[in-house]
Image (cartoon, rainbow, N blue to C red; front, side, top):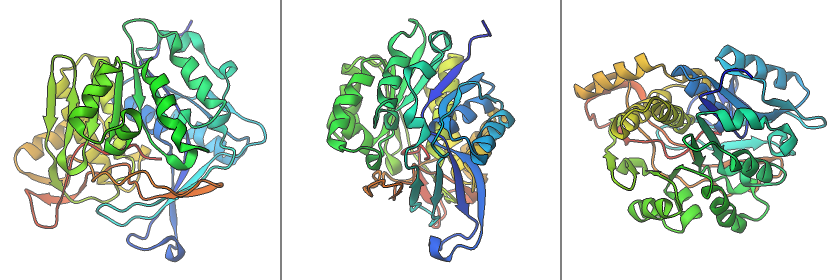
Length: 372
């Protein structure tokens, strides 16, 4: 048996095409940059930047973009051995528009997405049992067979390891969104950590109030509840401890991917046994770092970059990046008929040039949601 992995994520992958022209609609965009994307995939990349041994369980088509996904994962230090090539399906593509500081509409092109076609037979159950952290997503519960596969992946976890449920609410992925709360409840029964923004916790536990949502998540059995509140910051709560972090004013470049940077850093803190406060601090800063960049996976920071950012932000002046998250923007409501659009920026924070709390800066904190 190979050495146990620190982090295995399950969920979607995509090839992201982000416009190189900022502040214009897709109809007027002339050129795009191509990146690796997808929430669970980005979290795996972010974890690898922190030195974790990571892998992602996902699906791609037997096409050139699937080849790109595998090559990009290996380049980021993420094992691709759990990436399944699904016959007859195409690797998803996602486009966005970039309207800083808080408007980043997403357009999903994922009819018959291969990641939603994964079956129990595609799982490496031994690796999943042995991993220190398994990270699952709400979108992975949106359709069968992915739903049953996701639940099976965490059913036999070894006691002592963490199972993180990223609430990751994308209503356009669900044939009947009203079914989501019941399936979230099934997943929460296996989770030790739950992470989501106010829209997502409302789906999971029926309230947008951060304090009440955290309490309800703990009552469902998780040991740690993290509620991301946009401009109000982030709340993390256990049965015995509570941490609240305020936002830092920053200038957002592209909020997409900030939530996944937050997630990867959160996983690193959990795996490393860091204090809850320190874990939240590095997660918040990681999100800020990425929101100040154009890319998602390609922009995930190293611990040294995070420490540098925290050090500069403590002094009140930040040049380059900062901490943060954009306001909760919902998760969109456009039905996914091969393509969907959502105004949810995932979350954001920023970079560029920030001096203290200049009028042009936007207060942001823990990313509201993952990327794609």
